[in-house]
Image (cartoon, rainbow, N blue to C red):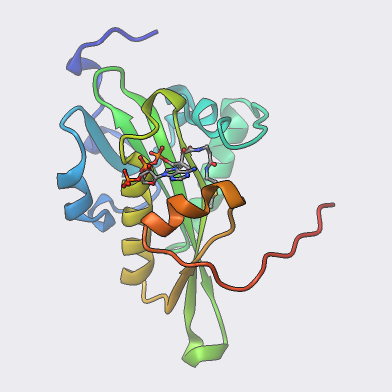
Length: 179
Ligand code: ACO
């Protein structure tokens, strides 16, 4: 386990990032506590507890570093499409929150775009400190900046109040067919 010194923190400039960090809202950056940092997913975030944080959401199997990095590379090949961001605890250089927005391009609505928010997770010890809210605000801002006419997501009944606090409203139904 990393020790609690800020010297552990890896600056964005030393990382191979999924997208341009300037796309992350300055307002959200300013609202975060000083010991936390928000940035795009990095190619080395396998080593910063990315999968452990995601496991508060669902079952996560460890693919190993090489497969993790192949997945990262595949996401980066499609520009302006996959935006996964993370919140980092500066003292440990470990991830404490994650979330993603996927930009879907359409033929309707004048070749419109829709943002799909996916895989929001906050480390159990950090829940209730508005990190989930900040992640949703940052992802929604990216979606809107990309020109999406709407941003949507699926969630459990338990999480409906959380998303309402983030400014989202219930609309229609979710359908699923698992393989
Ligand atoms: N029920 C009611 N209110 C809630 C809930 C809830 N389940 N969760 C958060 N809130 C409220 C908070 O009390 C807060 O309200 P306030 O502004 O009045 O104080 C507001 O919503 C913002 O909450 P945050 O502190 O930002 O929430 P947190 O950082 O804990 O993140 C999250 C919420 C992401 C749901 C977190 O609890 C988590 O990781 N849960 C497990 C994984 C999960 O369910 N992820 C979402 C899956 S859906 C998807 O990915 C699209």
